[in-house]
Every structure is written in structure tokens, then in C-alpha cells.
Length: 144
Image (cartoon, rainbow, N blue to C red; front, side):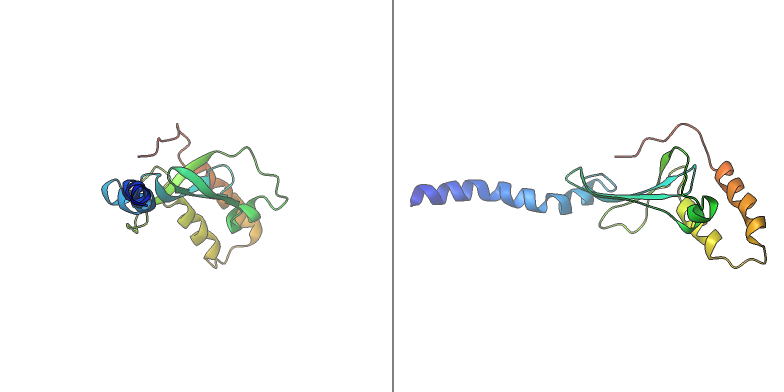
């Protein structure tokens, strides 16, 4: 009985560390992929991709259309995606470091939520121009 207890107490710190690691590590290294959510934007179509990480492993990934991408490509025939980081959130900080495309998803949502006096035919060239004006250089490396 005593031997079992000593083995239990030997592995208890390791168990606590494994359970608390994703919540303690971001305090010392914010925006790491140990426990975070990353939003990507496709700069060719305006689509959204979200990924959530736990222990550096993606546990959730989702690609979604935005109103912007649906109206720009109503047939759903999207070009080859070029995913760029828009923002990265850790569990404790409610802001993201600035990436080259930081705020692009917000811009696309604001464009579609606006109620302009323009017709759909006049808005289509504006949507295309917005995507053309986004930076198309080499993808930035995420800060880990």
C-alpha cells in the first residue's frame, strides 16, 4: 500500500503540470500556439479560417464564407486560397499583435454591414479593389 502511495505522489506533480500547463504558459509567453485562437483571412476571396490550439496541437479548425466573399463570388467558385494571419488571441489578453493583415476581417465585415446608396453592380468593383489593395508580399512568420 505504501509503495502505491509513493508512486501516486511521484506522478502527482507531473499530472498537475500537464493539466495546468496550457493555462500557465501563456502568462509567460503570450500569443504562443500552446493555447490560442488564430484567425486567418484568404486575401484572394475574403474567406475566414479559424484555428484553436491546445498544447500546440490544432483542436479546432473551421473555414467559413463571409458576406463579402459570398457577394464577390456568388457561384462559390473561389480562387486558390492564400491564407494570412489576421489576428491571434491568447486566453488572457483580449488584443492581438499587429500582423500585415491585422484588421482585414473587420474591414470586410464593416464594408458589408454598411448601407450605402450604391447598387450591387457598383459595389462589385469596390469589393475587387479592396482585395487587390491588400498586401500580397511574402507571408509573414507568426510570432511564437
